[in-house]
Image (tube, rainbow, N blue to C red; front, side, top):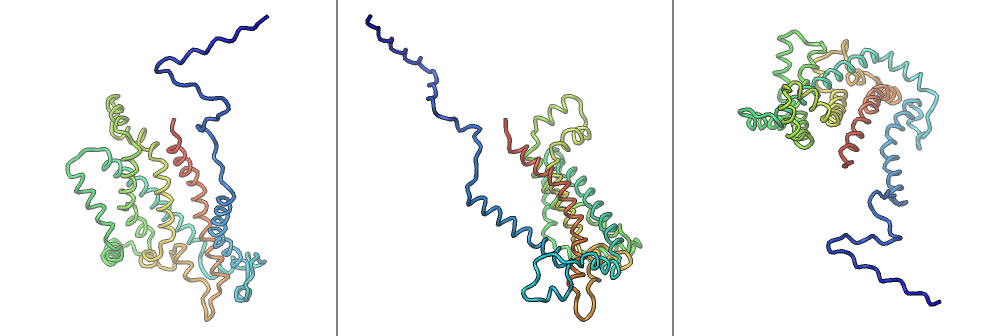
Length: 301
């Protein structure tokens, strides 16, 4: 029997979307993979970034004579614990670490809290003189901090705070950079509709801040906290003015290491290694918040 030909396919209706051709994969959701050049550059960047820390470990575990060799040793040596003992003998590094943790932690907590409050006020609240106050706050960033050292020292001397930790903590509890940073972050990440909906539900300003603003601002607070902690931990100028060797921070204590006609670089690097470990610990704690906030902002439904 003769087979009848299949009827022709009906033309697509007007306005209907064309069917995708078989054998073609959609680009949406496809995982991108870097080439060998990209991975090579990333590996080189990691090696260049990690080499100073590795060299600190090598220098801290060697003797001063080993560091003077040409070419220098590139592998860790056996003198790490001996150099740590020399650090504790030449400077009160334990007390300095405790003081630095107290100072840096207090400054970080105060800066993050106060700057988030001020940033929220400048970003979302309406009050008279808001623009002028923000301009004055940002304008203080152009004043060199060295200009305020003499009047600030006169103030803490009048309060009898010389050689006390509050003399270093209180001047750093708020920063103009932190206020401006949190203001810009909340302007972009906090919708006005969310605040208006909370107002309709009867939430007060304090409730809005703790229940809405803080969870949204957490990645920005983590970044500001990390930057503030590193700046407070590495600060040397004001602690050496306001404190003495009997109540030192880490940076002031490191100044006492490696004394003599020939500086013992291995002891100095051992003290530097001890002073670097808390910064790495803080970065490990806050790094997940920073990366999580970046990924949360990058993924859109």
